[in-house]
Length: 422
Image (cartoon, rainbow, N blue to C red; front, side, top):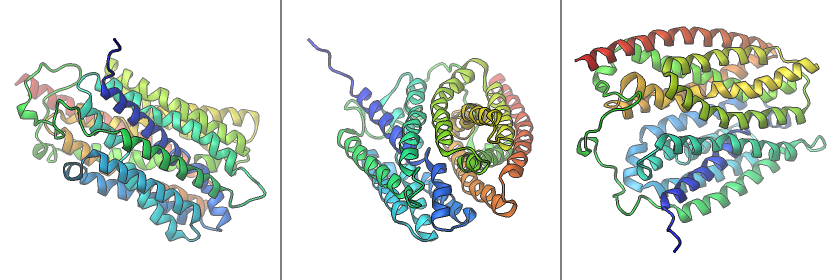
């Protein structure tokens, strides 16, 4: 007799497909469209970059009310609304002619991501998977890199048409069709919660006490956390890190083309980047589990400094092309600082008691950083005609943030030791 498959694995597969498609096709390909759109419509890059600002502001606002929306409407309806928002966004990108059309598309993109990607996946995994949550979450989120690798190759092939300045629109129509089809499948097979549990998670106070393992600790109350200087220092570091990494990642493809590297090779670099993004998401989790927060932060941060400098000095020579590929590979090791490191920061620095509220703050300030980063980076390009100077400046700022985070982690460690000793 064939054993019945636990439906949680179906849910996990649906989440994998959702992240693969939504982040892979709608987010990982964003930098490929910057130059074609701005040149076809004679639009300054700084003006176009406000599209990302609207996107990230929408993410920040929607995530503030995520818990309330889940309680009122349920996961399935929000996921459906997310796919609809993403499909509409891609459709508007494909037909937009003036700057404010792109701003509407960016807002819808942010709403769609809020209900189909990291936050939603975290909620779904927490509800369906009571064991090995970290492993399952890592596997699902790795789909972002894999999806980006596939999407980048497809989009590059479609929009790389010298005879048609508006070939990028075909790329957006293709993405819209993929999102609509995948969304239909995900919503059709999705279930709110296992039959043995209610849709609403049990309160922490009702759960049996268990011995804490690994880096988990009881933590401090949120009302006390917000009175501590290192809470705000951590939040500011997260916001600036998000601004730097998001801004440079978004401009990287355009910069490589600006310095004379051909589009096909740029597409290959972006595809390799996406593949290694999946690899390094797993690696970051392993490093954290084995060596702790400080080692993980330092590895990712120093890597970020190095790849920014490498990208700044890329050129069309054979050595420069190697440098471009080095950036594509190792920039993926820096990006966990703006994604999976957020819940790690919240849990390791402030513990379980205030985890949800601290994570909400960190996600919000990170999104604000996203909104500012693209505008600042592209604004510098419009002023100086090159990204090189701002990339070097960003590397210096990133190094300073790494130093500040040493104090943040030390302050948290001292408080944790006092609480655990008591």
